[in-house]
Length: 120
Image: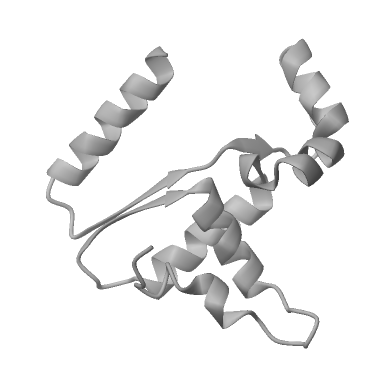
């Protein structure tokens, strides 16, 4: 897959560029929250089956607004730290879930352990 190869090359180049911090996000299918004209049949099909797909494969999808929220959160919380972090879709979803109130009324602190520096 050419896309994956080029994305990998770009990630390596960013890490090697010497930036103080690099955060790489690897989301899976990004669900567009706002209605739009889908570019092809496969996108239209995914939009129709998204609720079922999300229920069956929760780590293979993420809403666009949740992805944006996680990206902003990482930038704000990790400001000033050196190094690079790679966030797979599972990590991104955990960040989003950690910022949403749990049934007990507060955010789930365990879900944000990756962002707080705990190695997995």
